[in-house]
Structure formats: structure tokens, C-alpha cells
Image 1 (cartoon, rainbow, N blue to C red):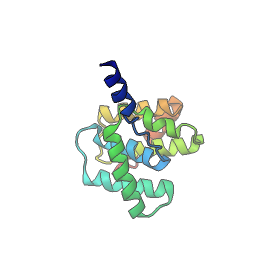
Image 2 (tube, one colour):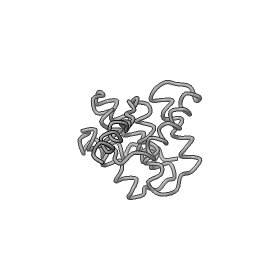
Image 3 (cartoon, helix red, strand yellow):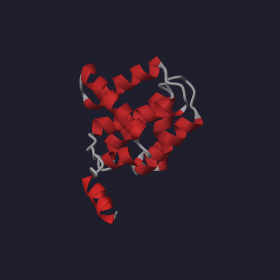
Image 4 (cartoon, helix red, strand yellow):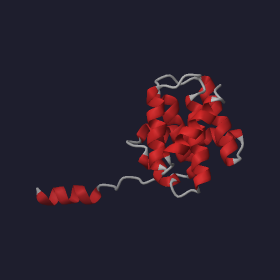
Length: 146
């Protein structure tokens, strides 16, 4: 019996580890914010595409692929750390741009859900963005709503 257990364990494949790109990690975070309030709108989807294209300077086709991969990663994830760990080494300016994009998604429907804010707050903490900048970016995005 022990031999069968050893054979079974030896034959088990290790879990797949996927190296997330920065772009897919950001797409997953944007998706997380969009879905936090339980209502994903077409306007939020379009805004995510625009923001990713602007953040990374890529075409809509490339961005669309990133969003599909990001959504798949978001559905499989158990925490935001999976995504923020890939981004926390970026320069502060880039991390702030990502946080601002998250705020813009949250304000797309002109109302901030507490769950959206909680996701963004946790992301800011994991990206080591000071609370004062968190608030400044929130106010800046609030004025840019839909």
C-alpha cells in the first residue's frame, strides 16, 4: 500500500506556475475592481481597455488578450498578492499610475462601492503606496468619473 502511495505521489504533476507579466497582473487587478461591486458594465470594460492601452502603449487587440488572460487569472486567484507581488518592484510613479487606473474603474459608474474601495486600499498597501497618495489619487480620479 505504501508503494502504491509513493508511485501515485511520484506520478503527480507539480502545479503549474505561470509567470505573470506586468500587463496581465494589472488587467487582473482592474478586473477585480470592476467585479467587486457585483455589477460589471460595458462602460467599465471599455474603460479598462483604454486604460491598459494608455498605461502600456499597446493596440486594442493586444489589450483585449491581456484582459482575457487577466480575467482568467483573477478567477483562479486567492489573493491580490499574486498580482501585486509582480508589480511592487516598479518605480513609484508606475505603481501610482496603476492605482489611479483602479480608481478610474471604480468611479466609471459615478458611484464608489465600499468593496471597490477595499480592493483598491489593499492593493495600495501591497504596492507600498503611502496613504496620503492613496487619497490624492482617489480625489483625482473622482473628478474624472465616467
